Image 1: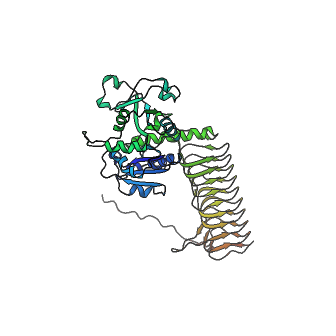
Image 2: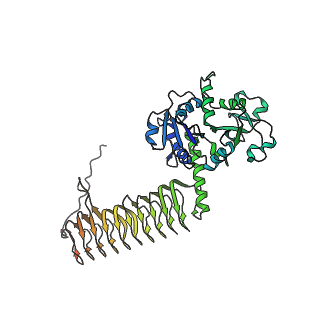
Image 3: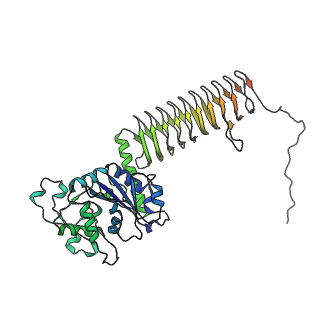
Length: 470
């Protein structure tokens, strides 16, 4: 099929300079969600109609499988599809979607395409408890020809769409409304588009007018419905975007729960990408997962953690308030609380990285630990190394980064500065307070500290009292 995605709207109620379809839901532009759904259907052609914001939309979502069609000025939905028409293959149907309706599922769209087949006009409709403001779906009587079709078609063929302002009392009682999503035979669609008129109060070309044209030509108009109302909800304001964010996150949480992941509160997790979790994982409240995150079996994530493009191997505890960005943590490790692992950090098994420890571009072998108040950057740390509190690798000279190497079984005393490039040999010990500027030999104690002196008779300064102005 062809797919046309309408994404040209301004979104005045968003009160933003950013085009509406680029506002993010779960860390991805709304249009990105629609494109992902579209691609899952394996369409022959994808055409995105853009307008407001100029080239911001095609620049943000540039891809070789998308044809871009500019709508300027924006003169209605029918006019938008007209801009896409030259890109469409007449031999297959065209599915029309909206860039600000991000949560429609592939299953629902497949159901719509199947219901319409290659020669009918298909509309995605939905029954609303309060249809105020929506165009009502008016159907004819059902007949025997519908007995073998999906249940949603048993109510009879669609005859027309009546806008709320034009509806009589009987029509206003209809709960079934138009969502705007449709699929049409492409050759017919192009012909109908050429007949659209803008003789209306808004002087716009309405895509819904093609329903009447199809009926008048004897082309059946059929309907399909989504599994849930939220699949059809569009975004016109920040409030509506926030509502759909929670809908999406609850769906993700339910999927995790079904897979056996423990969640302290399904309403307090945010997945802005892909989260894959093994057996017996547990995630506490207010955790954010961005990009691609993989959790091994038995991993526990404490409250208020942020993980971005991270891999956490089995039976590791990530304690509260940790930030892990483009890093890997080996099995059986313990991280945090208040630890930060920055890009390029790869930890081996049974590592301990404690509170207020920051690591960047560091490789640490098994059974090593930096339990508190340390910065380890651009370093290679061996196995069974202890990094004491207050230790800093001085890796930046103001122009270039340099590497620190700490070999197996080294012991780094507290408040040590390792001025890179420097190597601490295997089994070496650095005394507390050492500033290391040359390599420390293996197996020896290296210490660098000023001689301790006590000054007899020294008096501590006292505060001078100033006379009162009174």
